[in-house]
Figure 1 (cartoon, rainbow, N blue to C red):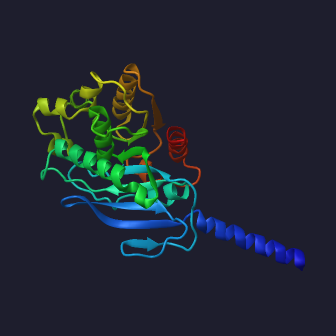
Figure 2: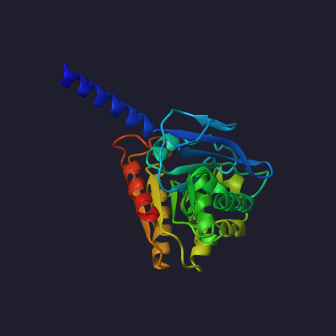
Figure 3: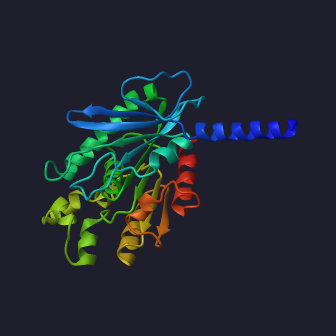
Length: 288
C-alpha cells in the first residue's frame, strides 16, 4: 500500500508538472501603435499575481532566464485576418519556453504592402523595447508568419527594417518574386491582384527578391511550403532560399508537399508533426 501511495503521489506530481509545462499568461490587446494591437502569450512566471489584461490558465510557473521571443504575423491574403488566428501556436510555443507575440497590421486597401511592412517593423520595435517586462529576451527575437504574414516577415528581413533578429520563418507563400509568379501563372489572381495591383513596378517593389539581390547580412531563414499549387510554390520558395544562400545567408527549406496551405499552419504543435519538429530544431539553434 505504501508503494502504491508513493506511486500515486509520483503520478500526481507528473500530472502537475505536465500542467506546469503548459502554463500561459495572456496579455491581450496591447496597443503598439495607433489603432493596432498585439497579444503576448508568455510562459507563466513565479510570483506573478493576477492583473487586468492577464488570463491565468493554471497555477504553476516557469522560472529562470528570460525567454526567446517569436513575433507572429497572421495570414489572410493581405486583405483580411486577425492576430487571433494563431491556431495552436500559443500552447505549443509557450510549453517550450518561448514568448509568442501575435500582431495585427493594417489591411489593403486601407494601406499598401509598404504600410504593412511598416506596421510589422513598428511592432518589432515595440517588442524590442518592452518585451523584457513580460519575461521575454529582446536580444533573441525570431519572426514567423503564415501566408501573407510569411511574405511580410520575409520583406522586413530583406529590407532590413526588422533590426537584428535571430531568425525568420516564412510559412507557405508564393510572393517572394512577384514577377516570376506572374510569369508562371500567366496573371495575378485573387488575392494577389488586390494586394499587389496591376503595375509590374509594384510587383518588383513588393518582392523580397528585389532587396535580397543587392543586400547582405540577412538572418537565418527557415522556409516551409505546402503542396498547394504544386511545383510553382516549391520553385518560388527554393528560388528565394537559394538567392539568400548565394548572398551568404543561412537558409533551409522544409518540403511540406503532403500538407495543404491551411494544414501546414493548422497542424503546428501537434505531436509527431514533421513541420513542428523542423521549426523546433531551428528555433533551438538560432536562439541558444
